[in-house]
Length: 131
Length: 131
DNA sequence: CTAAAGTTTGACACTGGTGTCAATGTCAAG
DNA sequence: CTTGACATTGACACCAGTGTCAAACTTTAG
Picture 1 (cartoon, rainbow over the protein chains, first blue to last red):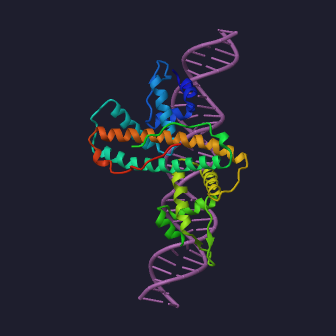
Picture 2: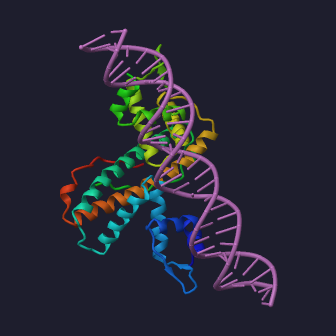
Picture 3: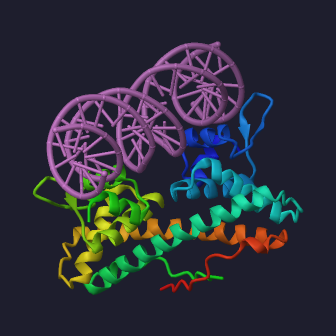
């Protein structure tokens, strides 16, 4: 698929998709005419990238995270000690963000509940398994 | 306490503390000499603010969130319908961020685990209650 | 063939969050 | 009183993430 479709399916602007590529977060094949071409896998990838960036993870780190993810998926023994440490460090940062957001989410919920606005609570009810 | 101490205790630079105040996320009393003075409560507040901002919540929204939180705590019946809707909207955004971060956290963990770097997993083991 | 829609690269520009510096004021210790 | 640490405000500046526009090319529809 071409960039326009990818953008439509992910809700991420073409501008950003190109930006992410430029930041090495994405790779795209090129059609003979020079157009970028994407596969299904890219849809997921782009969503993840956008999500993480939105969640305050700088692109530089998003790359490290997703790369590690891929490596893990392909069961690679890529553990250059130094990368592992960087990841471990980043892990605590991520956890802190999660905690902070979770607290806020919970208080928003309580608030809405307390003010008879339960009606607005149609969303989100997935199980978040921790540890 | 004065701004320097607050900064030291929260790990947030004085620059940012003033910035947050300017963005109406914080209020500070002034000593007769003009110095800002803070209470224990501010320590928590500043941490929360910084955490949320770091987690990608724009200051404008951080204000809404924390205000609602306070209102709830004081059991105020402040539910101007319109604010409630804004919160509900923001709630789904927060949840999305949490989900995205959670997935990343989990894959970082798996990765470290898979690569014999469990050693680096000393941190984070708190229970996150959902719903 | 032509017009419209989509793509490419590249540039300009804006916003939000931060750092840093400068000039001035306050306070506590020597 | 002087010095040094800390405060105040305000400005300048930077980076990251985005929007938007322009000029040129490709592809699709009529």
